[in-house]
Picture (spheres, rainbow, N blue to C red):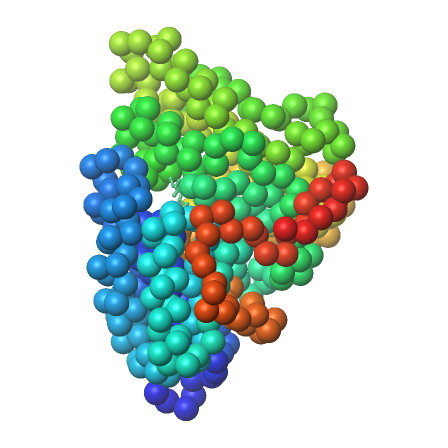
Length: 365
Ligand code: KG4
Ligand code: ZN
């Protein structure tokens, strides 16, 4: 290793779902080596099969880490800090990463940090854009979560809204399956929607009413299962004609989902006066979401200071080890280290998240 590389060197490992990924970051949070291996074993099932995911991680984790180290031109014993996704996610898949990291950190006598997957997504954009720093409004949208946050500082997050049922990515995946499109559903719907007319079929905007006020508990919350049911009913009504209508249905669904996501995010911008928005999680790869967020933020008639929308590149929007390494570095700098009693948790609480302050019942999870 050359002496020009700054310390600490952090190795981040992500195995919470169907990507096995490892990355090495230097002391300035530059990505020295990064490998993302997507599992293709799930394709024929139209969704992730948890046991197959865990087995595939176990088979690939050593190879993925070795390749990330080789790209970074460092050896394993040069790593100063290890970071790993400890939750939320598929428990069998998480255990592979946590056990690998715990054993390696113990063998090398190095500190390690347990990272929350969604806090990892929050750190995705700042790896590429230095301005993606708090204070900001964050919309975190993945296969398992839909969270609207006001981040006043790293580690200080106020929960404004979340989904009451399906996550945004889950809705994309379920609607895609219904329309006979391949998994993962988000990219399939996005692709087909470019050929469709979003105005040809009108779909509902669940939990979005113009006359809602901030003290309404539904003001910032989301619901996607009703939208999915509306697509089920629409395809039933279309009957034999559904084939030719699929691009239009895909476009109408994407339009409705994005309208709700953007509208609620802009409510948060207006109420907090914070015009910087950070998008994270797999659904933030959606080009229509990015486009609409930027366009409508510009048009927002409110005094919110600087206006900017930050999102990571496609590679860093989906699950990856670099965001986990970056979040681990933040937590490590805060003095946090995992002990050997640290477990993986499918429902790990988001660190630093305050809930209920809108209604005056603030509490920390
Ligand atoms: O963050 P992520 O890679 O994994 C989880 O943490 O869940 O997010 C995966 C989700 C899937 O539901 C996938 O369909 C969705 O992100 N997704 C998209 C797009 N790319 C991935 N949704 C909409 N548009 C996209 N372009
Ligand atoms: Zn994710």
